[in-house]
Length: 199
Image (tube, rainbow, N blue to C red; front, side, top):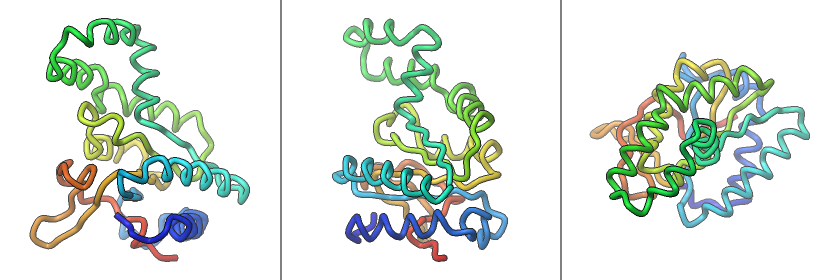
C-alpha cells in the first residue's frame, strides 16, 4: 500500500497512464501489461473518487478508459441468468459456505466472468482498462483468478487493477496479492506495482 498522500498518488497515476511508454507497453520485457494499484482498504471511498476523477482527466487528454467494477458486473451476470432474485430469496436459509459455493460456480472467472469482460473489450474502443470492486466480490471471486484468466483476453492494452491491500514481491516468497493487507489472495507474479513504474 502506498503511504503517499492521495493527491500525489493521483498525479503519479495520471502521469504514468497518460504516457506513451505506458500506453505502448514499453519496458515490460514481454510481460502482460497488468498493473496493480494497491491502496489501504480504509481508503476505499476516497480511491473510488480518485479512480473516477482519473478516468475523467484521462478522457480530457483523449485517453479512453474501459472501467469494469467486478461487483457491478457480477450483479449484471446474475440478473441476466435470472438467478439474482432467487439468490436473494434463499440467502437467509443457506450457510455462508453454500452461498459462496453457489456464487463461485455461477460467477466462475473462466466460464462466465472473463467471457463477459471479453465482450466488453470487443465492444469498446479504449486505451486502458480499469478493474475495481475486488474487495466487494471476495471470497467468491479471487483477484488472482481474474488476472490469470484475463492474460489471454486482455494482453493488447494495459490493465490497472485497483486492489484494496498489498502487492508484495520478495525473493523468498515471490509475489503475492494480500487482500485487505491480511488475506493472502495467492501468488500472482505477472503484474507490476503501478507505483514502481516510472515514465
